[in-house]
Length: 415
Ligand SMILES: [Zn+2]
Image 1 (cartoon, rainbow, N blue to C red):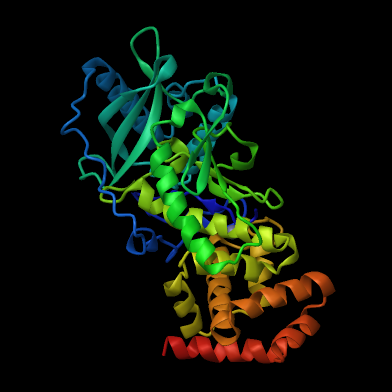
Image 2: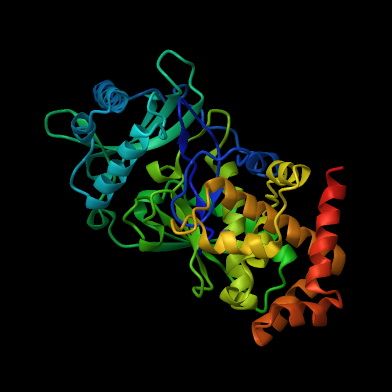
């Protein structure tokens, strides 16, 4: 839905591990919007992938070809040479071509790590001549790697490789795999990561189920998408995970080991970073099963998703409160609704701060009235469509008084 979790983008000269939760494409330069809770709050403690130690590179010529392609790509980005950049991209997949065109444009504006360099440390053969390459990413040449990422390359007849994603035809039919409380909808391409995603999804779903009382037994489906063209709901350049209102059973997710998943810090696992966005989107799914999510104010639906995911963006919110820039929850809802729609001119910082307001507003409401009253309010408003009356009926407090109390509470928790 609007409020998809979006993949981090690079900042100039270095990269940030930020997860934008915003609608549509937004500027990547989001101060204080990083994603520390993904590992800090995670109870998934998998070790980072060991690279280059017990699985030596089996194919030196492929490694060399990939390094050559990566160097040509980095050089092209640094020089702003579109033609040279395009020459490193497999052209058979139109969606992939478009996405990479966006990468070049963003890089030209200083946004996609234009000085970053990449080195393969492990390869994995994939069907149809593709190679999955696990890369270390340095913010600039000669600097120690700070991040890891996983890209796919297609072998060419002349021994070179091109940066690629498989086509839909090559991916073939989807299959479903049930693991514990969740179902994975995936391609055979992703068979090697299904267990890892299922483990995170089960942790996320357990958290969601412990806070949201579901009307019936639900086994959520996590749809894994290894390419940008694999699902129309994930075609956005930077959308990482999404719940589409009304589906009531499916969360869309980029495959952990794909270009779309973006890089992780060198000491971080893809799995741990996945927990917050997956919990956020599964909360939307659960909410929609209780009550049509489109009938709930944005601050409540997004606030609950962030509340359950334990992703409060406290630093941003406390900064706004300290400088008397706190908004009303109505204002937060408006910004979330319009997102990066160009007619409104909200920035990525605004959008992220609106989510911070929503999560803290939800927290305050739940601490004051309880989660049961939260749902009573949602139901009452869904039925009456009259907000002020519904709020007063359910809480016996006026909406304006609640807003004033919430401002005072916000000041108090950061005092
Ligand atoms: Zn959301």
